Length: 382
Ligand code: PLP
Image 1 (cartoon, rainbow, N blue to C red):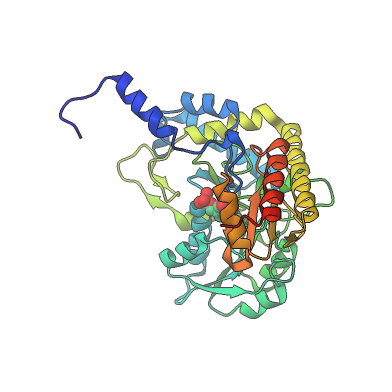
Image 2: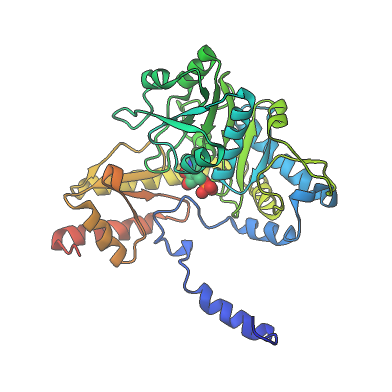
């Protein structure tokens, strides 16, 4: 730190320069992110609740009410009217809280968790932190977990099974209804990671897969407003079907206005929760349906264009993610990056993955397809 402070003008000018180094969602070039430009109201709401700390709720009863209402909205959407939960830092913390609860409920010496091979990498961290042994089950040709294999993976040490409603890489939705039946049959905790899918699947046209609390075996669901909910980061969400489950993850807080805390993060902003609240109110079900419809329409436009250009789609998109290959997929991804398109290359499926978030408009897809065709025609692979 320098000895004397700088003027606000200088600080802001420096910050602006640095901020310009960041990519902006609005330019439509970020095709690899599951986050997006927050809804315009999110910014206003965030600023309003800028100082609040949900980790000391006695000081911030308004923010606490906001969090409760966001949780209630999410719970109602996922048919868990009595569910309890929190707005947390993201899908990682939400998944961690779920598996912490499952482990503590089971109280087993060498706890194991059955995960689809396609599970998000956050579970690797979580298994490390909680000393859980991950047991991976196979996925089928559509990249959904093979439920027969899940059954084979269950042992006397299994404390939980996990299913994903919208995998990060391909947007696949595991057969949560079948996992729910297995969970009931084996009397094991089922957690659903719907960090990405939770705020788009309910808004897809019927018939749509069921992944929510209407399935008796589902004990908890991760659903992140800062992904398809267009809220400001950090707005993850965790819901527990039964409020009593919270007893298994509580910690006493001796000097705060609260007597106990349940989240991993202690001091946590109420601003992100307020941004989610504002969006839910402003959009309503109608707005979310419209958003999902537009994202899926653009996804189809991209998938059709990619196929027409001669590339191979890895799997028909279920959600707003398109994954495709060429003869030299990695080279193609590098050429696209060189042209300013931020795409992800996924080594385990040898594919390029594009997430068609709300900031990716049809005009951006048109430009992307033109560049893709040009690269392929000129074989300008770098
Ligand atoms: N689960 C899924 C399915 C995800 O897609 C992600 C992130 O993309 C996560 C968990 C982790 O979420 P976060 O990065 O908000 O911690």
